[in-house]
Image 1: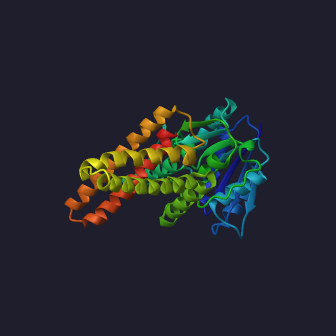
Image 2 (image 1 turned 90 degrees about the vertical axis):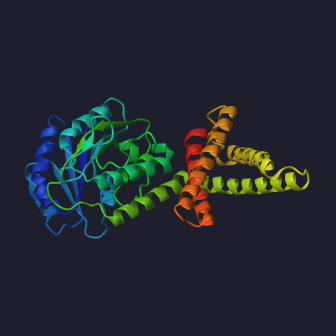
Image 3 (image 1 turned 180 degrees about the horizontal axis):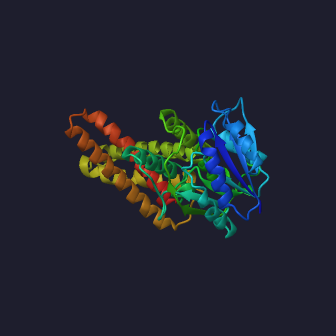
Length: 352
């Protein structure tokens, strides 16, 4: 099978000679091509890449209008002649020597093979603690917001391989440069394999990480939630939760005023009826397509999520009040965090 190595570039001239030499060494015996998609680099990356075409099977695409890493990769997909696409950066933080391992995973049946920093054997070199925190935090947000990728340890890797069929005919429109996440949500595949690698040191050029990058990532996750229907679930879960408030308040009022029950004790059956109301509507409406577990297990787990959420709410409330915050504001923050916790537990466990 022919391999197309797709490399988006911007001011990476100083890395190309070593990069191409190492790719050529890694792919000895393979039919391969290198596709450089350059965003009109001021340092003449595209021009230097063309000069290397005398020695290596390089195709250079110079873009002067539309720019951005993800769109460059998509352009590379369109221009590629290979059966397998390999996507990697030009900064030598993605060691070409890992490419054969990715291809081996594909040959053994995987549709997508990811060079992963976060599986056993993988890692990063000389990152500051805050860079690691940002990376792990971004991955956690993506895996929680998009259950389809929750088992992928490094869904934001920029170094991966895939069969052409995974993206052929698929409309990809990512924000920023985390195109792998877009492919994992929209692509057509059955099996994903992660191959460990160590994210190396940048040899030349500048890092892409910045505030704009992080904001674009959050926008990207939001758009994928909309596309995958997860945002609709969140809205439905919210509406059901509001109906539970009405049920709780209504029965509490009736138990106290009509039945004369103690105000403290009356809250217990009122809360249980609200939980049953919420479970029923979520089971019939919000998560109706995800009933993989027996009814009793879904109901029991829903109760656990409700209790966990209430505990989280109380801990946050008590802690913020102790620190001097207004009790109403503290309670509101506790409610919001509790809601997020309950949604995550129910989406990933109750109806996971």
